[in-house]
Image 1: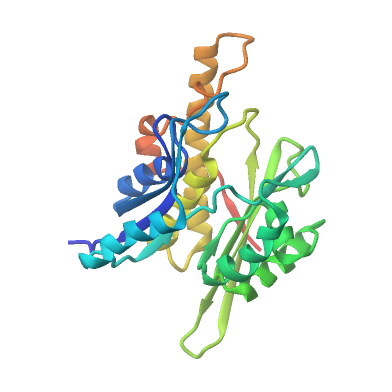
Image 2 (image 1 turned 180 degrees about the vertical axis):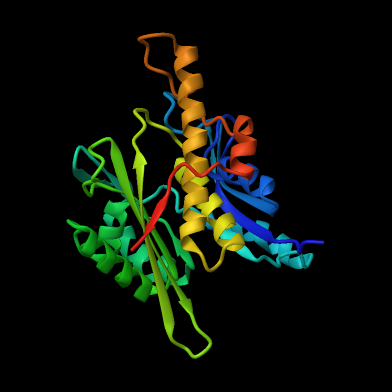
Length: 284
């Protein structure tokens, strides 16, 4: 019998929709992981809607939840999954902006990143963490080396504005993984992926990506290429199904609403469990 793998997922939670723990729990369970979910935030729905209501747990309340697990001796985990919420920032129309106060940046750099095994920043977040701009693939690889030096063995820049040979309809993602040989030396695998853009704004994709990357790197610990291909291909299937359903609900010529653009997770169970590889990674 396959050994049980347990994950403690500390993220936000919504009653309606798929973000945070709601986006991470289902795919991890489908892929064979046992999940204990701690909801750092509990909202009625994600903040892409016009209105939302709910609660935010403070540090003491989070500590109490974990203390209960510890008292019962059930706090033994193979992985801890957390997507820092809110994420640091992103680029819009070529200009980067932070979602969080700038004085939190040193906390990410000095406290969060050094204890992480895997990080999945977008290009803007990678630039913030490294203090270096990215204008080319070579500069992106150098930034990933800087992030490796901060602690994480696996770094995936999930999206960038680097040019694609396929044209402006494609986004570039880059990955780098360091593994240690028995003799103490390190081997670095680097990959590049080109993904077709989807003309819609989704919420929860980062949470879903992080969960599936965790699962597939566990199943393929020494093959970043395969892990990323399965992760991104599954993402492609989920997003395509979501946008097709949303457009059908909205009607011809109408822009889908946030409710109609909620990720079609349950409907994509088979694609999450065994994704057809439709996005190939190139080993650099």
